[in-house]
Length: 82
Length: 431
Image (tube, rainbow over all chains, first blue to last red; front, side, top):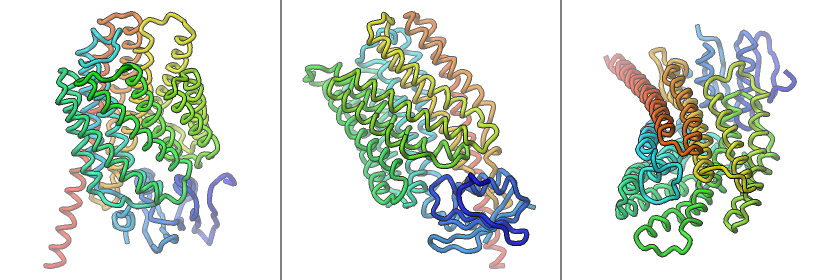
């Protein structure tokens, strides 16, 4: 886990993954590692709306909700799809 | 905001309409079929082929311009804005480049097959104009790229190479009418070197630094080997242009070694347990590149390899680049379709629902069989073995075209269903 790109921390049952400033494809790598290794939910802090992440999330049975979108600070809540 | 709406909203500036990349990919799949069919027609003249109009020249350009350039253009338009974090300045040049290049390739290769100089000239001018539009639009995008310097540098170098190879290509076509070149064979060799190692080789090396880590889910690759590979590749191209062929081969070998080291690094650090069929093709293509470079060195060291120049050209074009591009296409077509298509739930369609394993397995098997048979046929000067190989390649290309059309049809169906749902919701709200 120490090799993972980005910053991550836990608040209660929610994992936060901060990938701001990372080059592609590191944001996707960091988030998918957490998707595969935590039960969710995850709050992802990103530079921008991650177009390439959505097909990979859907493939893993997860979905995301955009909760804030500003240049350089986009946040998504990721959860397993019901 | 649901994922589907956020996906279509915030990302819209960097996500082109699906019709733009898909028209290039579908054209590439069709030109792929035509390339193998032309090679089957020209099987008899392949072993000793030394240039000149006919089916072999047409097959070569159906592969390089029809498959390679079309795939490179479609993939660059869609992926570069995401990598460079800068939206395309405008979409009309992307559409325009297709409507110049696709009919241009058809006309050019028809002229090459039948020896019709006017067709070749008009086709070459149209294809060149399409490539120029592509180069201009990509240059504007690269100029706005703040990060990923090593990838942008590969892009700039590839754009420079496309101008050189297009200039050489147009000169060669006009020479068919005028016969003004003193050393046509030397210029044709240089045209091929700039096409294979310049435009396509540099794009393969640059895009692989983003695409392969994305496919295998590994961390981004170290930049230093990428810069070293680029420097050696460019030195090799300069040496080839100056006629220093051994230095050129050393440059190509160094660039290939840097590329292979980076790809191995990405695969070793992969988060995916199974890399799948496309990686069998990617690895196979890399091994064939090494074999081609080794055959070149052995041949230049005066070993008697029958029909060596044709063998080397075939290994580079069909064995390395075609294998690489088919691997990339089979990964990115379902991936991009998934980004563009929402299912009934409003979520993206699964990549696994959009792909089709059987045609891809048929393609992989018949493609490698074709490479082995045709390479053997060239060395043995055996037309029957080459015909068998070209037939195998044609079967594989038809299977690949079935896969590509299937992805496009599923995308179209999903987009139509999504539009119908949105229309239904609007009617409900009004009611």
